[in-house]
Image (cartoon, rainbow, N blue to C red):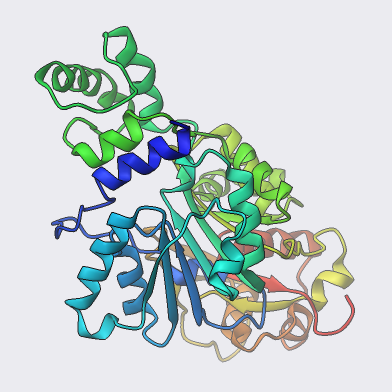
Amino acid sequence: MNIAAQVREIYEQRPYPFGGRRSRRQPWILNLDWVDAFGRDAGAVKPARVLVAGCGDGTEALQFQRLLPEAMIVAVDFSARSIALARRRQRSERDMQRIRFLVADIADPSLARTLGETFNLIACHGVLSYVASPVQVFRNFARCLEGRGVLYLGVNGSRHVSTVFRRALPALGIGLDRFVASKRVSDALRLCDAVISRDGFPRVSGLGPTFLAGDVFGPLNRCLSLTEWTLFARRAGLHFRGSGSSVRLFRQAAESGLQGVLMPRSRGEVCDLLERLSPSQFHRLLFSRAPEENPPWENRRSLLRWRIELSRLNSIMLPRPPKRIRDRLRPVTIVSSAASLSSEWQMPEWEVELLRRGHSMRSVGSILDAIPLLVPFAVLRSQLYLLHQMGVITLRPPAGPA
């Protein structure tokens, strides 16, 4: 039996994530504001066609329909039993009847032809780490993605907890080819937990047979660095746009005043560098068919022509407009629910005005022309770089030639 068939057998026996039963845990939800801020180009429409690739028992597809009630959702899985469970759940919820559940293998070269349409958003969470041919899957996604669409990918990182277990269990005499519940296996898992939980790893022994059968046991679990995952995507013609960990890691650098060391790297390049310093256990990544557009950080004239787009990723609480703009600091509170960050920044008034007037995609230069202050270019680009990398704003190219 080949690897793909072995993996299919695992999920036929134990459909992911809940085996058709309701779970007390809330399912993971993709933050669409984060997708817009880091993955989508200016002018891109709200997702109207969504592909859930590797949908398991349908939990994620049902959640997407609640988030996007007008969207067409197509959800596929290679496990016929999983799709049967998903359809059963769908029948019990009256407002979920528009979802189309299909038995299909995301590694099948004919996937695009089977689906017969392109999508604004493809979501593939917790699936690709267990696929024998990831480049073929990326190629399929590239064919299924419309020009301004975004691929969201959730995959295991090089520090994923399963890497530790898969190294240790054979030394304890436990085979990894198949999960069979027993006291001997349970004790070995608990021993691993007891030792590694202090190193920041989650406890695994109590996560249940569905997780254990696919992640700790089984024929394949790719736990790779960000560089390795993006290399697979690049071979399929897809471009890396951002990572869920980038804002947190960049903020740690910025709090030490070191964001200038990273300039003029793009968001994607910053993600790659910071991931090399602090590898993730799990990646949440965005890709598109279009390469990322990095503002011209070294050219003042060109940078002033770029337009400011405020991100919906954050709630920004600005102070009251002043009667006269002066060279002083003002408190600005920025809250990001997606990144679980809340902070009060002390910003110069010219920067506060950039945020106040940046809601209409005006250029940096046109906003500064209305402010009676001279802002040194080194200071301007440093602050713009900080706001752009943090996802508070996204700088978009000028409407005409740059």
